[in-house]
Amino acid sequence: MTTPVILTPLRRIPTPGGDVRHALKRSDPGFSDFGEAYFSTVDQGTVKGWKRHRRMTLNLVVVVGEIRFVVHDGAGDIFTVNLTPSRPDDYARLTVPPSLWVAFGGVGRGLNMLLNVADIEHDPTESEVQPMNAWTWSWS
Image 1 (cartoon, rainbow, N blue to C red):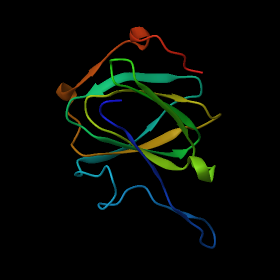
Image 2: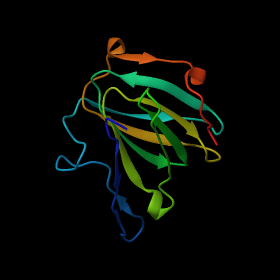
Image 3: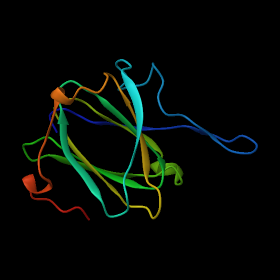
Image 4: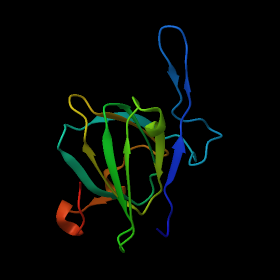
């Protein structure tokens, strides 16, 4: 992939009564600025995408459930990862820089929710979408 995504393992700090889970610090790789943070949900078996941002950097953390992310450079390179906060090895932040196509789908039963800490505020004119069949690939 010509523009690399960054997969950053995140810390889980055990505390009595429940863990503290890091998401993003100013000093982390992939952090460039703060524009907005929002949560998005995706039902099991549902896929959202393809979307490409021209200026926005995405910092994606799954907070509930399990979500599969597929990142495509538009030329053939594909990066795929499943993230879930319930498995320590799969609790990570996916940073997707501008110019890459991204799709994500619900894998877990019940609620699948992600947090996106974006470096700019939402601007509907800075992104574009493609139909899911724009590239040949397997979701499974």
